Length: 252
Image (cartoon, rainbow, N blue to C red; front, side, top):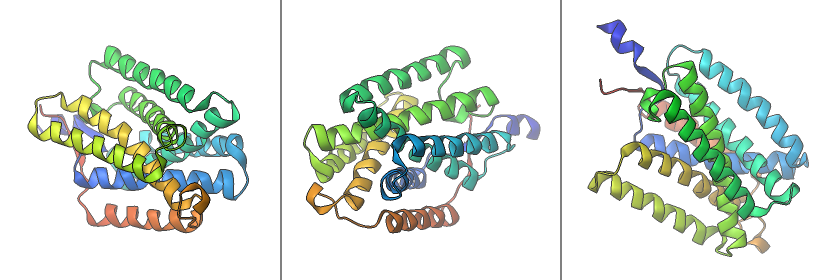
């Protein structure tokens, strides 16, 4: 019986309030950390994307090699997806010149395509099924697309649509609350609600991160990207240490 139970224990965390708090902190850190390398250090979007992509692939390899859920390994990998998502979205939107709308459209297609492929091959896109190498591969590819999409979406609303950072944060925060309401007071598919919330936490973190480190003339607080990144990282570590972190499990 024990062996049967362990077989179906996922290598990703149970989705709790602590999960969403850490996820938002991680996405905000991804914005400030990505901007720190590409802008403050002057590495540029392409070089920064290559650096963070290498870190991302190394983290995924480690995550896939461990035999059970490790909170720090998992969240370091999530942070890696947020930083590469930040610089990759900025590279596509600005350096390639496809614009925020083009970036959002392209990444939406990639994200939906990843989820459809995952479902057609494995029969589920539920996070509690992430217990095999194939499921993990789909999981991390999908997350990378969602993080990159979230960055482009946050920039689109804040800049192109002219909402600014605070109004954009309120918009995405309200949408997340709406999804929370659907979770508690409706019978909408829980897996779809999870992925919807997972995507929306990224633009929320992106606009909050921009609000923290962008110049006053652009509506930000002009805080040091290095300081903001360090503080966010400390908050994430404290949350991991002092909140329950256990693996998600299938209900059968």
